Length: 77
Image (cartoon, rainbow, N blue to C red):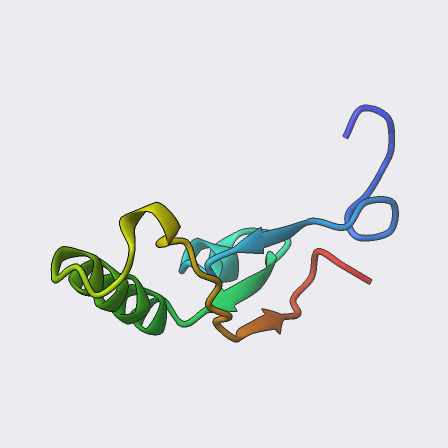
């Protein structure tokens, strides 16, 4: 970098989704891995319940916690 700052010494960078490129980039990108299959299942289940009118559309928002994992690579200390 032009200002002589370096990763991860001066900056930490964290990505999201743990895509293939995070392992290929240099430096290798620290990332958050999400179970997208579980996320999709939860979303589809909620949509089906909305379509079947099993939930009140005016109050259909809900919180669902999906576990994530921090994959530590080279872009953090």
